[in-house]
Image (cartoon, rainbow, N blue to C red):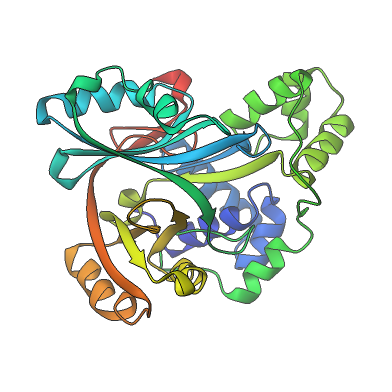
Amino acid sequence: MADDLDRRIIHGLSCSPRVSFRRLSEVIGASEQTVARRYNALRRGGVVRVVGLSSPAARSQSEWVARMRCRPDAVGPLADSLVRRPEVAYTSIASGGSEIICIVRSPAGTARDDVLLRQLPRAASVLDLSVDLLMHPFGAPGTAGWTGRGGALTDAQVRQLVAGRPAPTGPPLAATDEDLPLLEALAEDGRASHTRLAEATGWSAPRVARRLEALEAAGSLVFDVDAVPERLGYGLNATLWLQVDLPRLQAVGEELSRHAECAFAAAISGRHNIMAVVICKDPEDFYRYLSGRFARTEGVRGYEISVRVRRLKLAASLVLHGRLIHPALA
């Protein structure tokens, strides 16, 4: 089981995915050798993967949140077929095994039904389908999502890690064909060294460094840290579907994004206008959150809960037997 040092390392990487082990060790107060050894053990064990991805905005893509209620006998095969599609991410089975929740990326401007129904290889097994546009994620850019509440970094430590990170300076620019080997290598290992990336691209290490900086500054390249909360001691994952008073939409979304239990919060279209992914240790921990900090959030008129039963896919990793793996290895 991961300990507080492991959680501090994961939190630090979520704030600055390509930070050097030396700098990370200085901020979190452990030796460079220890930090490197712990991270490599977490990665080999399938607990954590740092990945670099071409941003949906740079590819002129929209993101849609799909909820599918299915026949029980069809949930597993349908979900497994969805996770093999590169345009489908963050896929899970919830609600006692009767619901599939996923994010689908599609060209901006494509009609909703055309985008999603064609993704379903066995549409007849879907009893009910809701599709909502993911409009706006809450939370400050460049800050970490959920990384395990124990052992989290202080605000001062986070500021040290994010200082100097390139901030997007304009509209995202699409990556070129020349960038594809670079992006493929980063999707396998977002912390790959400049030397390793130079080998993958045939470029020089200085050219790799310049291109990484340019892509990240343009918002074309984003980094994510995929992690398995269950391996960090947090076994209950749930999605809250909230109905929020419109004047309070931004305030509620930002407040939720600051909750230690909240891994992700975004404004969406449809009957519910905010979705929030919450991660807790167990049902009692989840109840304490709902009846405590969440209950004090003003502006929430109603909510539904989908409790996750099985996690299948994250940003760029499949979850197989509780381990993160590259999709190409499945």
